[in-house]
Image 1 (tube, rainbow, N blue to C red):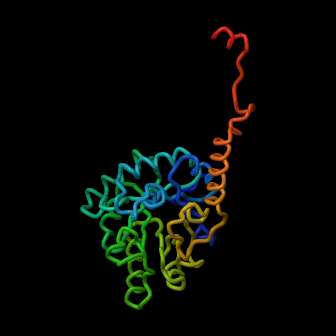
Image 2 (image 1 turned 180 degrees about the horizontal axis):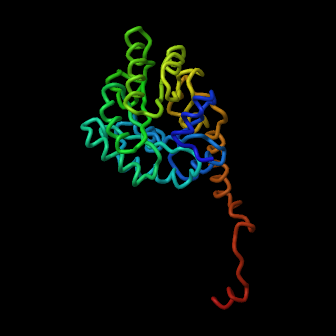
Image 3 (image 1 turned 135 degrees about the vertical axis):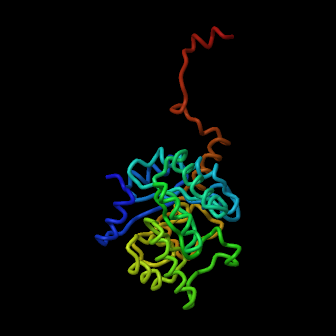
Length: 275
């Protein structure tokens, strides 16, 4: 069954947890879709785990459109959400609507995501008024890493916690269909989840959220630069890939690969005529 913004809301109403992962390419998205994931986020995290940047800030609209389109070609049933990169929506409401429209038209996704609370509610309202579903993002918002002074847990004191709760209610009122809560204390995330009618998708925010999301390279052990505390590795594909690469190199150097079964035949008579 095709996952939509409506099915996400229905899952929250029924108490059914929502599963999401990030993806950035056709093959991975197709596998996730076959596994029956509810949603796929084409995150601007691709800047770090795919493009090798130190943070998400250098990611462009062209990067996001390129990767979102690839994911949408592979995912037929998952709800695909395209991330709006840094400075694609902050400058003006007009920019926000225009770039969200590009991501939908050229990237072929079914929704967009942007970071921020009350400060970006005018953008959320305008984008949703243009019939583009918006997923909000609160807590540790990676595009604000310099303002936060690093990747830190958010909402730990009373003022900060109250601000997160207020922001969650604000983005709901502005029209967001769901909100990501990143690096938020579990009890606070649970309170927020109970205080709003739209689904909360947690990443480092505890089991009290309505759903969960992880960067797939983290949960498969493929990204070794650092591993956040909230990540559970379900297997270590990274080590398996490393060993496979080493085995391939060894067999190429020794001549063991390609073997006869990996080659194509030609008649000896044809070869003789070439001499």
